[in-house]
Amino acid sequence: MDKVKVGILGSTGSVGQRYVNMLESHPWFEITVLSASSASVGKKYGEAANGFLTAACQRGSGT
Image (cartoon, rainbow, N blue to C red; front, side, top):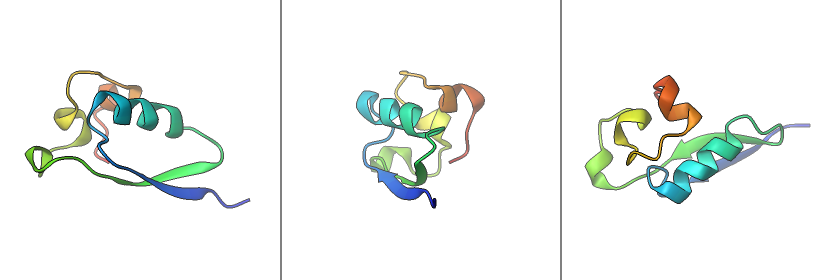
């Protein structure tokens, strides 16, 4: 079965980070797009997240 491609709006906020955390290793979904405010432009995901660190942030994910 092909994974369903998903995008997460507001991915650097606390709720968005929870979605990233839940979906990053989910067998049915593939995160293909992360969006955030203009304050996050040019930053890696781990740098842009607002301190509610997920597993992806702690690894320094470049997604």
